[in-house]
Amino acid sequence: METFLEGMAEYYSAELSEKVIRGITENALKCKYNGGVVPLGYVVDEEHHLQIDPLTAPAVLDAF
Image 1 (cartoon, one colour):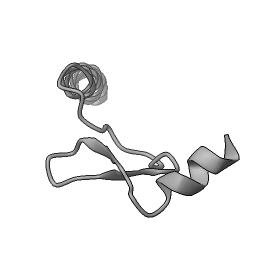
Image 2 (cartoon, helix red, strand yellow):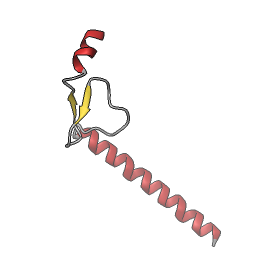
Image 3 (cartoon, rainbow, N blue to C red):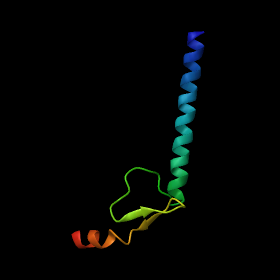
Image 4 (cartoon, rainbow, N blue to C red):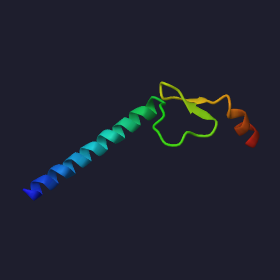
């Protein structure tokens, strides 16, 4: 029984990994933000796209 449960857990983990990678890839192809720290000078809009932040963008332009 333990071997069966371990096999099911391994299958679930592999399937979940494939689904997550597929979701991240689809978001990237649609130019959507996948998460993490938002780059300085940008904000994420309601459609999950990166947009230039009018408040912090001038400081970034001055720095670089």
